[in-house]
Length: 220
Ligand SMILES: C[S@@+](CC[C@H](N)C(=O)[O-])C[C@H]1O[C@@H](n2cnc3c(N)ncnc32)[C@H](O)[C@@H]1O
Image (cartoon, rainbow, N blue to C red; front, side):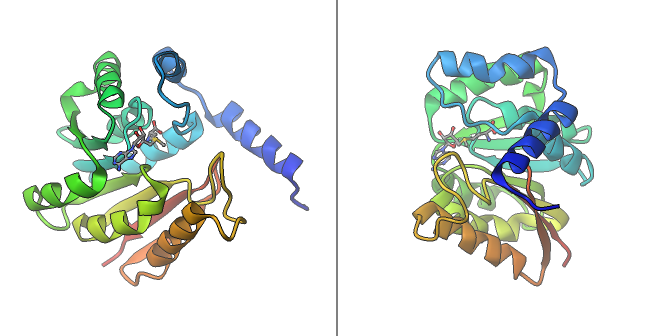
């Protein structure tokens, strides 16, 4: 089958239609967020379901998210945690964090989510001091694309054997594509992809849903 843009768009639409089931709260969350000025850049429902399924396949005790926005992806991740598990989600914009906190309560997952407000590169070193090394089951990276290689350097030592690194936008976003060789975001994301792919302690692959989700599992 030859792939062209039209067929690719159809496949993405089809995936969302068939695998994008979600409850009424999640279905309306980003519309509410946009009404109060948040950007409409959350993951899609099929990507959210992927995050939940993958989280549920780990020990499901500790997850970290970089880039909360309105809490959409955080709710999916929280729903994949095992009993007693927690998600620490990091967001730079206080207005986004405040909106997300309300959504976590509405979704009934606020008991297992801790919000850290600040820039990920500032918050991560403090978090690393608090946590045991190799204790994190899932890291979901979805903040500043040009910082992906720096995030990787910081989160890599935190990930447990059998734990996962997940990252959104590893093939592009609304404003750039992995084909655009000179784009700064593309260059940084490409570097990140290759760092994870070439790391002997990880097995990694890209799932080409929406803008591409990297899935890496620590094997050593
Ligand atoms: C793509 S959105 C996250 C979407 C969210 N993961 C979802 O799918 O529902 C990126 C978020 O990262 C936040 N952000 C931007 N720079 C950041 C930084 N340096 N540290 C942490 N968060 C940041 C933005 O404010 C925005 O809310």
